[in-house]
Amino acid sequence: MATRQTEAIILRTYPLKEADKIVSFFSRDMGKARGVARGARKPKSSYGASLETMSHVRLQYFERENAELLSIDSCELIQSHFESMQDYERGVALAYFAEVTAEMLPDREPQDAFFRLLLVVLEEIRVGRVSGRAIWPAITYFDLWVVRLGGFLPDLATAREVSAESKAIAGEMMRNPLVSLPSREWQRKTAQDLRRFLARQMETQAERTFKTRPMLDQLD
Image (cartoon, rainbow, N blue to C red; front, side, top):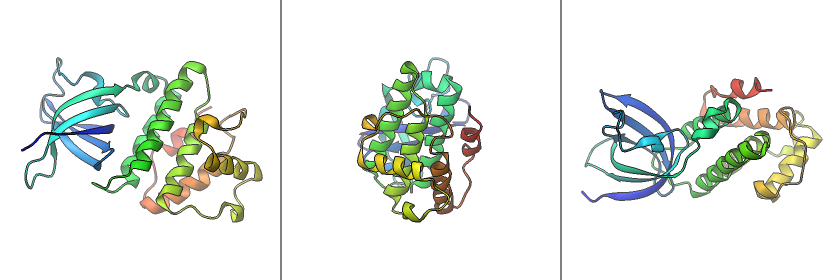
């Protein structure tokens, strides 16, 4: 069994037996998958912080024939988002990104554009923590592009529940990278109607309600 390597973003981990973890991750070249990290729960585990939610990593793994789970050999940290997770507001945003990714994407189907989208919004959340920028542009951008990449973005021009200002913001986000958006004073209420509209599209597509959506709505 040859060991393979992939760039990935950690979505969730679950305890397995006394010392192991099941790791759900989103791989750049393989799509969404799960694997077992042996010994990851031990106090002196070599995995360290690399299996934290939304960590950007390089995984080495191998796959046994007819096995449902991959076997993870090692995990090298490329970019940690641990400090953002310790900030409640930004932690909720990261948990939301992880939940949407886990619920919206099929298993074992490469989605390079979605992977690049995640890297962009994760970096904005990380850098914004230092500069004091609001989380809302990244969340709005993420919602819009998840729906657009999924191929189920309705015609916003006919969406009565979305304000003219929010439609203008959507237009800016479809024309510009996140880091190049026109300057705007962002608050939770900015484009909130657009985010709620897009969330309904995603939840309809996923056939479930996202648990982190109410948490976002309760932020100041």
